[in-house]
Length: 302
Image (cartoon, rainbow, N blue to C red; front, side, top):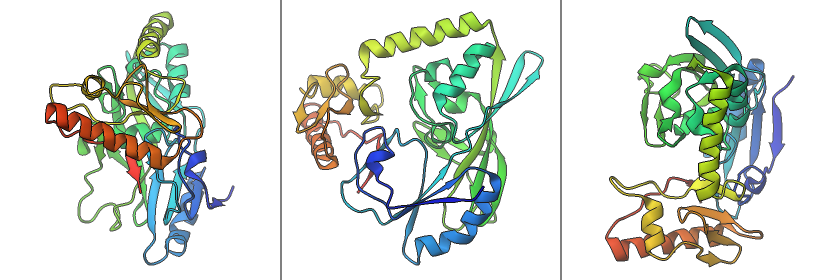
């Protein structure tokens, strides 16, 4: 199997918001040998001034409508996870390209507890680690034991979760001066989670409860990138936007959701320009009413 190169990949086809223009090229690695090829080709693909971006399922990206001078790299290693039982705990190794719903489906079938709060999150394992995805009090870092990272200069290396830094939608591998790569680029290749055994019906019940709660208050089936803004300390971005009159606010094909004011949704035919204008409008409205500056949670590529 060889490294796959896709020329002029459109972000509108690679993000859950279904927005964004083309990048220069996308390199898709499915097996470890592809990474060696990627390392050799990357300087040529990116050129002297080209930027490189590692992406997952695109569930937290908002890309502008025009051309992006970017080379995209993506892991598509989505084979079935490896499961290792250790008394009551279970170690699960999953490829970065595996979708979170598939990983959670495995947890449900085998009765593995620890990730139920991520039910309904549409991303990939790699993206969940890279952004420390979280929901309902559960963060990816809570169950992560180690992560396997690839860098152009250092190749593949396992790194203990305890050696990394995690925060609100934030992950840092904390590579030292002689580790990683001078470019700062890394690609999540695998992740290992420590979960606990429980009855499959109990795990399933908790997942269904989380999904039902989300479905009642969030546009889980819409074209969305999840929460647009981070929650300020001691407050809720959704509540602030709601009270500032943003719930249901629409511009062209984009709108703040009727269910949750912190979710920007593409109603059909939306553009990134409309999305960015709505975000600015919401940010200004909250600042004017509450004196709070909202920080973006969605990753914006202009």
